[in-house]
Image (cartoon, rainbow, N blue to C red; front, side, top):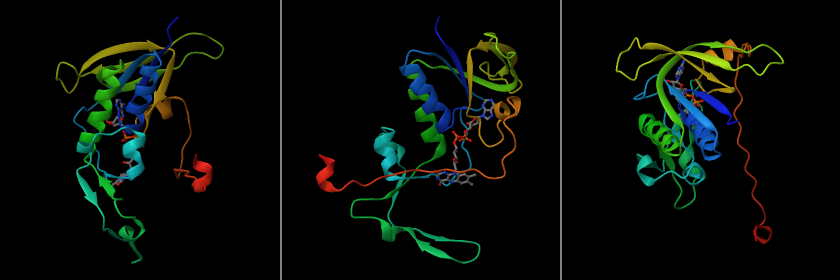
Length: 192
Ligand SMILES: Cc1cc2nc3c(=O)[nH]c(=O)nc-3n(C[C@H](O)[C@H](O)[C@H](O)COP(=O)(O)OP(=O)(O)OC[C@H]3O[C@@H](n4cnc5c(N)ncnc54)[C@H](O)[C@@H]3O)c2cc1C
């Protein structure tokens, strides 16, 4: 039996998850309520993301080499001072980045659904019953959308800060979020 997975939300997290799933031959459904969404975001991405996410050059709108950040308490940080020659901070437009990642996931086999997921029915414990997603399908162009359902074996909630999926699965409230990135520099002689 082929595993069916629904990814709710096609920001960077959702589209990247859908891409990995589709590449693995998993039946993947990628939901996005607003295909031209331009999320309010600074749009700064680290240089390493270009290679790691295999982004084409046109995704970078501006190559920033000098940037001063000033906190509300007037602490200043000159970001550009930490950059080495040839390095830059990539500034992108979110509608461009998100659109690129979403289209790539779709090309690799994820089925893109322009729909708003508004309810998630959870299967009972110790059953193989599916999850049932209730959503408004906007593919005809209507804002209200057509009410539809989809049954899947797994759901990935990538629907942002106010995630309905997280609420449906009673993931709890969080007062803070932790993001981390670990990079280890090996001595040159160990790199080989
Ligand atoms: C003001 C601001 C500035 C920021 N600046 C930066 C920055 O410069 N650099 C940086 O790296 N990060 C920045 N961030 C953080 C960054 O925006 C987030 O970390 C990132 O967008 C999270 O990606 P995501 O894919 O998890 O969620 P999101 O990008 O939030 O994507 C969620 C997607 O799910 C969709 N969705 C939501 N609910 C549903 C539903 N019910 N059904 C269907 N679709 C749904 C939404 O339309 C959206 O497309 C900033 C954030 C803010 C608020």
